[in-house]
Length: 112
Image (cartoon, rainbow, N blue to C red; front, side):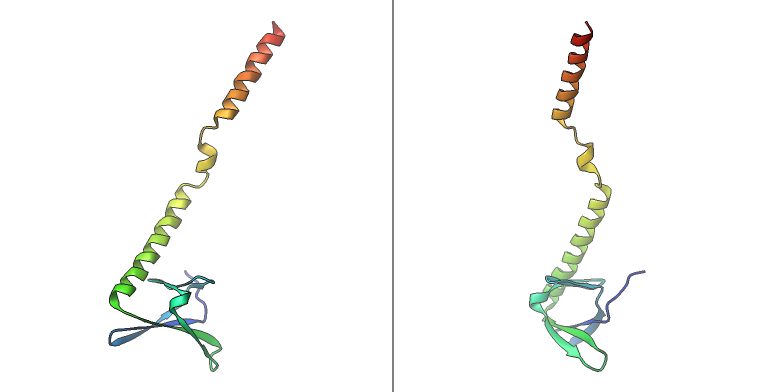
């Protein structure tokens, strides 16, 4: 279950208005379930009655599709990073193997 902030996004596109719950906000983006909007493209309005912020985004259908694509892309990157966790540790470190070989050779030379 996803936590939401009390803030909302008002998406005004063509002849319709959508009110979407905000999942996460930072300095660069406003994230909903379906879209990621750049903060620079939104106008923030304070709702004193409820004590939350309404981010107003006036956009066209292609802009909305691009924001949805951005959301899907960020989720794909997050999923990819989950499966690649620890990949750096699995890569072969040639310096480690060279030092190990030198140590083994040194041990054989000192024993003999």
